[in-house]
Length: 526
Image (cartoon, rainbow, N blue to C red; front, side):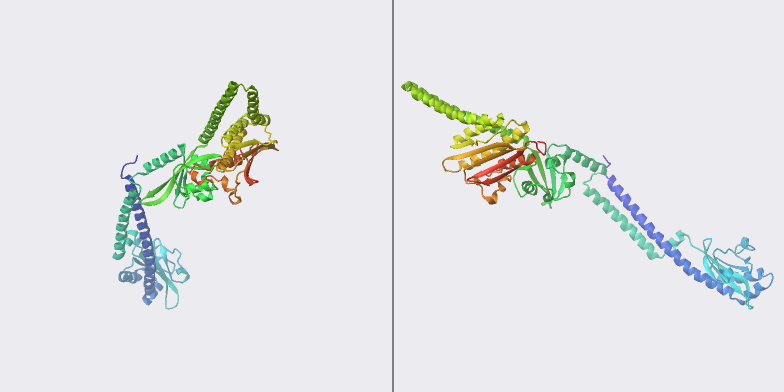
C-alpha cells in the first residue's frame, strides 16, 4: 500500500508545478511584450538620432573631404554621449566604417543585415541582436557621401524581468502565493474525498470489488435515483438475459416484463419477490441505498429458484399422489367393509354385483387414459388429478379424440408442468362454486409438429378484459389468497410455452377453455 500522505504531496507538487508553469508563461508573455515595446520605442529613438547626425551639414561636408575619419569622430561620439545609445557609427560612401566605439570595427564594412540604406532609404531593424537605425548622409550638392548607424543593445530576459514595473512583480508574487495556497487546499480536499486512501489502495479496492461482484453466484443490479443501471454483474446479466450494454440505461428500456420492472424500481415492495424471465423463476430482494438521509439509489439481488420451483412441483405431484392413494385406501377400506358385511348377511349375489360395479368404475378411467396416452408420466398425472378432482366432487374426463404418443423427456416435463397447472387452475375455480355436475375436460393431441393441450371447465369463465392478465405473474381472482406467491401457475405455463416457441390462450365456451401449444422441437433448446 502507498505511504500515508504521499497522495497529498503528489497533488501539491503537481499543482505547484502547474502554477509555476503558468507563471513562467505569464513572465514569457510579459517579457515578449516588453521586448517588442522596447524595439518599437528604441527604433524610433535611434532613427531620430541617426537622422540628426546625418542632417548635420558639417558631417556632410566632412565626409565629402578626404581623410574624414578623424574629423567625423567627434560628431558620432557627441551624439552617443548625449543620447545614451550603445554606439553611433559613421561610414563613408563605400560602406567602410570611419568611426566606431569598437576600434576593431574601424575600416571594416558596415554590417548591413536587411538594411535598405544603400538604396538611399532610412531603415530600422535588428542586426546581431541589437536595434539598429541606418540613415544615408547627403551633402549640399545632393550627393550620397556616407552613412550613419545608431545601435542600441537589447536587454536580457533577466533585465526585462527586474526592470519591469513594481506593480507587475507584486501581482506575480500575489498570484504565486494564491496558487500555492489553492494547491495546498486542493491536496487536502482530494485526500478527504478519497477517505485517506492512496491511489494504489483505491485501485486494489476497485479490483477486489469487481472480482467479488462478478464471482458471486447471486445476481447484483445497482440502480441510481432515476432507475438507471449503474452495476450489473455477470450472474445478473445471465439471469435477466441482458448484456453489458444495459449499464447506463433505464430499467424500463431493457425489455423486461412488467413484474421485473416493478420489483427493480421499488413499486413492488417486500422481501423475496418472485419474478419470471425466459423460463427462469427469480427471487429478488431490493434494498435502498441512503447517504445523509437521502436515497441515492438501490441494490437488487437475484437468485435463480428455477430448480427449486421444479423440485417443489415434483413434491406437489408426489403429495398429490400420496393424498390420492390415501383417499383410495380409505375408500377401498370402506369397500372391503361393505363386501364383508354382505358376505356375513349371505347376500352373495349382491356381493358379485357390487364388486363388478366398483371394478368397472375404477377401471374405466385408467383403461381410457392408458389406452390413449402412451406417455406414462402424463398418464399417471391424469389418473392422480382425476382422483384429486373426485375428492372435490369434480369429474375429470378425457375427450374421445385424445391421443398422445411417447415424446422426449424435455417435452414430457413441459407437458406435466402445463397440464398440471391448467388442471389445478380449473380445480381452484370450481372449488369456489356451489353448482352441481362440475367437470373438467382434457384434450391431448398431436397436430402437425406440436402437442396441443386443451383444458375446459364448466365454471364461470374468464372475463374478456382480463383474458391476457391471467397469464401475468401475481394475478389471481382470489383476493384472500394474494400472499405474494399466488398467480404463479398460469405465468409459469405461459413461460414454458413461450420458451419452446409455443403459446397459450384462453377463451370462453360455457366456461373457461385454456389451449396450450407446445412444439415438439422447441425453437430455443429446453
